[in-house]
Structures are given as structure tokens and as C-alpha cells.
Amino acid sequence: MADILDAFGRELAQATLTGPRARESWKAVLSVLLGLTLAFLLFDTNDAYWAAFSAFMILKAGVAETITRGLYRVLGTFGGALTGFVIAGLLGNSASALLLAMMGVAFVSIFRFQTSKYSYAWMYFGLTGEIVLTITLGSPRVVTPWVATRVGEISAGVAACIFVSCMFSVLWPADTDESHAPPEPDRETLPLWRGLFDEEWLREHWLPLIHAARGAFSFAVLFFLWRLIELDDITDSATTSFMVLMLPGAPVRQGKNQALMERGMQRFVGCSLGGLFGIAALLSMGDHFRVWVLMLCIGVWIAAWVQNGKEGASYAGSQFALVLFVTLIQSNGPPSDLLPTWERFRGILIGMFVLGLVSAVWPLPAPESPGRKLPSH
Figure (spheres, rainbow, N blue to C red):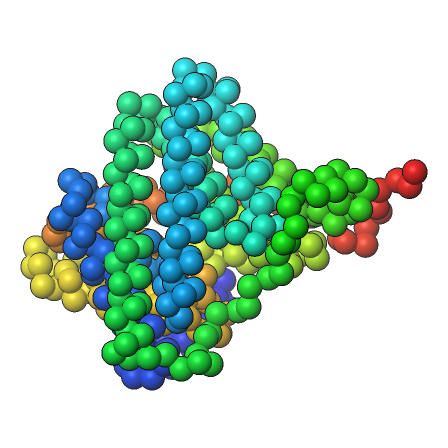
């Protein structure tokens, strides 16, 4: 954890208000503000942070990549919401059936994230589907309005981000070599079913299959923990478990168990720092709308700067933004309740505990291990 905190600090020490990297932070600020404005105007909701986080997360230096990510996010969200909604309608009266559905959605989406060139869409397909199903477990009556509002808010955030990206491409063009993000891992271009379950296919996909199975098993552990200690809601814990499991294909195929814990620790550090910033902002702003907007802009700028950095804290930057939004965006003005921050942080801790337990009990085998070798015919 100290290494991640040091990396976060080094990123902040390099901060400047001008230059190619600062350009991306200013884009993020304007995208979030426009996304929130659209969400407040179009929807009657206290959870407009979905629009803010969508606008923040899909932003890339290039307009084409931003548009592509935006389309993938909308399609993945819509597909996951529809899938979760249908499953909830069919199985909503059976907790055991919902658990099996959660495990199935986790397995498919985590595996396809590892292997598909449409990994971004699969990530949000699984995330949205899992949220819908966990909400069904605790509050089935709110599923329908939740699905409709969330899809609308996310679409508003995506539209805002694309508009701002296009505007910046004209008014403040990007340098061609300014990308700070790591290169995307190689993904399959052939259909998944090509050679499905042949020996060669299994050899190639053995570790992603095990990783996806561990993800499904994590949801089973979360479910029984939810029942054991009588949690009100496991949505935040499920979200944490799912997003931490979204590792690039290379670490999984190389059997790097440490990568999972590193990602979990980055989530913990980013969420902790974002929560502390949000709480400090709440204590200082009172009910002043302008101060609220200013603190939100400062937080978004910091999160975007760190996310686009090279010091090793990029994922912590995105998680900083997520908890910042949850903390500061609770209504159409300055919030007054710290409970959402605490509930999310508690859910993150539970999700990380479950992932740590599952990883310890069921680690990924090394690629060279006998466990990966399949018997010859």
C-alpha cells in the first residue's frame, strides 16, 4: 500500500495546469459537469454520479477512441441491464436461483473480458447485470426504475463526454504522441466458438477459464456472507469483487496472482483518498453551491491527472473519482450526509476480504504447471 501512496504522491508532485496531460484533466472536468447537468435536467434522481462516472471513465485523448468506448459502455450497460432485468423477472422469488445467475453472469463476462476484443463492453455488461441481480436480492421492487434511470444517466454521461471530446479536438487539438495509457492487450479476433473445447482451445484458455471460475465462486462466498452477517446490501461488495477481477489478459495468462491483489490495493487506496477528499470538502463547503462545484472540479482534475500518469497509480486515480462522486453527488446541490461514503467503503472492505480469501484458497496455477497440461489423446 505504501508503494501506491508514494506513486499517487509523485503524480501530484508533477501536476501542472498546462500541457498535453493537463488537457485531459480539463476535458474530464468539463465532461463531468456537462454530464451532471444533463442528468439533473432529464432525470429525477439523487444518484447522478452514474452520469459523472460514465463521462469520466470513457474519456480518451482521441475522439475516435472516446466514441468507441462510449458506444461499448452504452451497449454493455444496456445488455447487462436487460439480461439482469429478465433474470430478475424470472427468478426473483428464489434467492438460490439468483445466486446461480449471478455466478453465471460473472463467469461469462470475466472470461470474455480476458479474451474478446470487445472487452470494455463485456466489463459493463457484467457489472450492470450483477448490480441488477444484487438489487433484486435485497429490494426487488426498485429494479425497474433503477434500470431505466441508470441507463439514461449513463447515456447522458457518454453523450456529454463525446461532445466535450469533439469540442477539444477543434479548440485544443491533442498531440499525436500524448497517450499515457498502457497499450491494450491482444484480444481474439476469431469467434469464441471456433474450436470450442478442443485440446488446443483449452490449452490457450485454461487460465482465463480458471480466473472466471474464481470470480463466480467469489459471488457465492459473498452471498453466504451476506446471509451470515445479515448485511442490508451486497451491491458495493459485489461491484468491488467484479471490478478488481477485471484484469488484463496478460497477467491472467501468466498466472500472476499478485496482480489481483495489486489491483485490489489500488482500489482500496484510491477509494480511501477519494473518500477523505470528499469528507474534507463536505466539512468545508456547508451548503454553498459554488464551493461544491469548485471542490468537485478540483477532485475530478486530480483523479484524471493521476489516472493518466505513469507512476503506477492509474487505477487508484479512477477509484478516487468514483468515491468522490458518491460522496459529493447525492442530490442537485451540496450533500449533507456522509452515510453513502461509509457504506461504500464498508462494501469495498468486504469485497476485498472475499477476494483475498478466494485467491488464497484458489490461486491461479503457473502457466508451466502440470495443472495446465491436458492429457494427450
